[in-house]
Image (cartoon, rainbow, N blue to C red; front, side):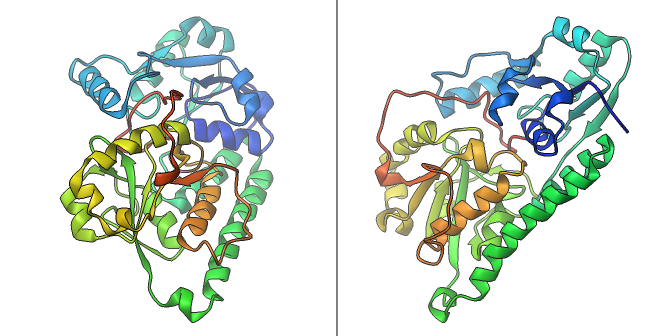
Length: 333
């Protein structure tokens, strides 16, 4: 079916629409839809109900909990812009009410418009689901050929990584590394949904979290018991500067400093907002980043974006506060 006025409630869907050539039909986006760069020029119909800039992970977590307890909205809809757009398709999710506009916001839009445009819900829980989301959008919008081409291209990149691992020498295959991926720093959350599968795709043993399951709070004792070889810090929606600033606080914990991965300087921070938090095509870049972190010698020549990851000890505290909207205990879509 052909749509002329699409509203995206999902940054990942926004990326997909641009990738399959539908950027011109996208008429409204959220405050988080900043990639590709052209998405920032689209009318912003969703904004956060509070200013997260300057807040640390503890403060963001508390603010979200307070809003939930008091049944106050996390997102604010621009009614005027919605009426002006008069969308015929909305792309949304109903998996998590704090990471992206949820059912309540959809009903608000229906009420504002006085009619119900087509609402396409996407709720990917693993890498395969992310690719399926691309196909679903392609089918819904009549761009299935471009959607399939995109999926084929992304699949080939993953296949290349897998093949290189399979062809590696016995030294690389001798022992799989135990990996912990932290989706939040305070409190500690283990990453769920697609992240465990991303780790497994690069021959890592994912710790505690399971493919497709929601992210969950863990204790430092859980990490000590698992005894990871490497730790990857990827707070939901944080860029690398904000992640570095937050992660430095972990060094104040004696139990944290006792971890093998910390003592061996095998702890990393990544640009989660770009390559891990959202179920977009850039998840494949996230897989390539993990390949570099887990197997630096084998993937020495693999090209990845500049400054997409750092060792924790290379993080330098600064005053740059590039905060996301919210902390999502389940992962941002």
